[in-house]
Amino acid sequence: MEDMRAQQIEALEVLEDYNKRLIKSMKNIIPELEGDRKEDTDKFLDEIVKGINWEIGILNGTMTLLNEQKERIHKEDINSSILKLSKALEGKNDGEIAASLKETLPVFEDFGKAAGEVLEEVK
Image 1 (spheres, helix red, strand yellow):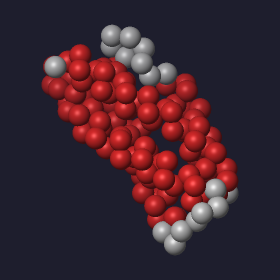
Image 2 (image 1 turned 30 degrees about the horizontal axis):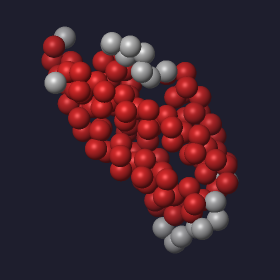
Image 3 (image 1 turned 90 degrees about the vertical axis):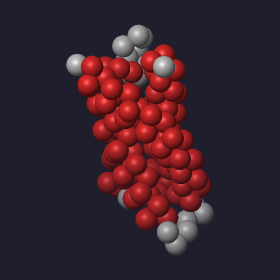
Image 4 (image 1 turned 120 degrees about the vertical axis):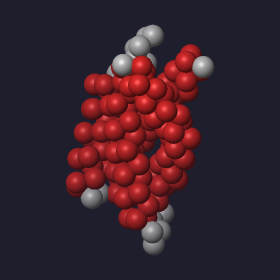
């Protein structure tokens, strides 16, 4: 059990830095999807989606630790947001993807904040 907790803490430590870069990337791609498309926008979006998926994996593996002291992460909110983003990505409509990323952004900001809080508590 203690080994699992150590792994969760380590995952949150890795996530903390990565999350900041992911959020920055999400903020940077939104204007591109709203009409300021660049040559590498599709590749950039693919990398962001991979990052989102990676963070969701970390979230799923650390949810018990994140919500141990108090409920910091509401899985229903995340699921709803990710489902909308997934549908927007399937539709390949830049405007819808941008709008969905704007809606999803606070979810990942909250995740980063929650990870930071938990890391402070366990140190």
